[in-house]
Amino acid sequence: MAKSVGILTAGGDSPGLNAAIRAIGKMAMSSSGIQVIGFRDGYRGLMENRTMRLDGAAVSGILTLGGTLLGTSRDKPHRMPVGGKMLDMTDTMVDTYHKNHLDVLVCIGGGGTHKNAYRLLQKDLNIITLPKTIDNDLAMTDTTIGFDTAMGIATEAIDRLHSTAHSHHRIVVVGIMGHNAGWLALGSGIAGGANVILIPEMPYDIQVVADAIRQRSRHGKNFSIVAVAEGAMSKEDAAVMQTALQTKETAETKAEKKDA
Image 1: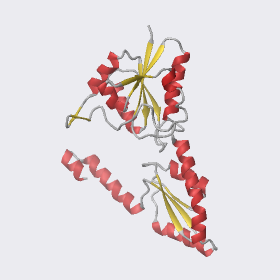
Image 2 (image 1 turned 90 degrees about the vertical axis):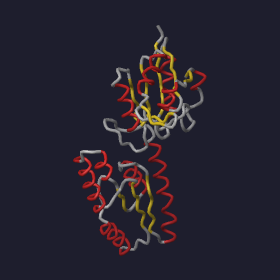
Image 3 (image 1 turned 30 degrees about the vertical axis):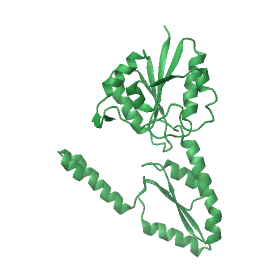
């Protein structure tokens, strides 16, 4: 009996998604008796049973295309907007899995996608996940799909700013994505030659940052580039955040958690 593999992409789009889809499709074609079914628009497509056959014609030529052939969404199986209401559609997705006679479902995505995939795993489905996020913030993996390309682009952006910063004698602050992880800012900041790098893992002291820039000025440097990670925060803000998290953990009711 032919084996069936399902694929979906969920969460934000990132470089490498089509390459991953193509790799799975090519693998299946090289193994006799395996068919690949793609679900459109992430978990919503799985819920609605919107599919496309990923055969040779479908995956041909997508290696160099950005985005994802299947489309994506940020819908959650247990909190799915349906008819103006938020419903738990996990069991419906389980039914779709069995209707398509899947032997395994491959979920390509970041942290949220993995959490949602785990919910399906708890329903006794065979689940494989591929780590995809430019943030590189998934545990138990060295490099996530999309991270290398994103770091290359961020590095080039920082590198190009040197000319403007130097010519106009400016302090240039560059905001870099990464959610609550500093991998992208740290890697691109070092490679691009940033003078100050602020990451979430190390709350900063603004006075120390200012002193570092003044020190450069005293040594004849008439510009500075500061790379700031998306989740970077000052020591003061980090202390407030830590207090709020502790309050939330000890809260006994939803109202208390919301107030925290």
